[in-house]
Image (cartoon, rainbow, N blue to C red):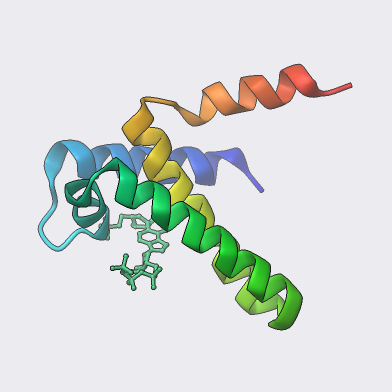
Length: 94
Ligand SMILES: N=c1c2ncn([C@@H]3O[C@H](COP(=O)(O)OP(=O)(O)OP(=O)(O)O)[C@@H](O)[C@H]3O)c2ncn1[C@@H]1O[C@H](COP(=O)(O)O)[C@@H](O)[C@H]1O
């Protein structure tokens, strides 16, 4: 996965936070607050599990994308950038 897609996604999410674009799903999530967003991350993780166990490759890819998006919204709420996570993953590399 090229990290510039992830970095671009994160910058779009930050843009939605600051510009509150009309009709934005991200803005709707933010308005529902952190507990709701955290619950959505859990839901999307479950949907990844279900897709992995009983649905095809395309559904699995789609659910992983949903999970990454919702995780990135939660990271933005927490003030954690993708680079922070990349650093941690790099630190763990053997
Ligand atoms: N990658 C995504 C992305 N993946 C999934 N989703 C939304 O996440 C939801 C997942 O479906 P669910 O059934 O879990 O959610 P729902 O039933 O629609 O709504 P709720 O259950 O949350 O009430 C869908 O509404 C999708 O539209 C996304 N929404 C936005 N993005 C990215 O975020 C950017 C900003 O989007 P907006 O905030 O809508 O402008 C977009 O340009 C995309 O790059």
